[in-house]
Length: 156
Image (cartoon, rainbow, N blue to C red; front, side):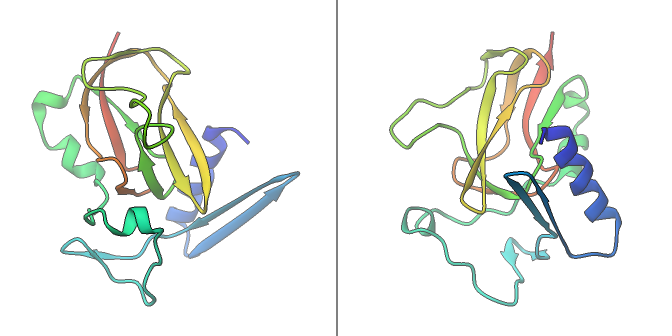
């Protein structure tokens, strides 16, 4: 299933009254859940989240909201790269590897920019256009929402 289909499913869940959607197609299962409400950076979920030891020591950060990026007119010429799913962002393929991209790097269509882990599945987020990374808005190991802005890119 390609990323545009996942985005369509996320949008469908957001616009509907349903809380959760699971789609099974051949050997792929996609489950989309509306994220819990956030108040002052704290998740208001009915049950506590259990995180792996490596992540539980990282400081909690609220996912980046799309409105935060649009508010600054200096950023108007930049295109954003958004997360197609809810999950945890990783900037490198492993803890001891270099980041996929850094501020100032030129990116090409199809280049891997980061990984978003959702339900123990590592989803590579690839560039849909070329340009130069101008800002990285999410820290390594931070949670991200579906359609949350991850990078600002000055397109070619």
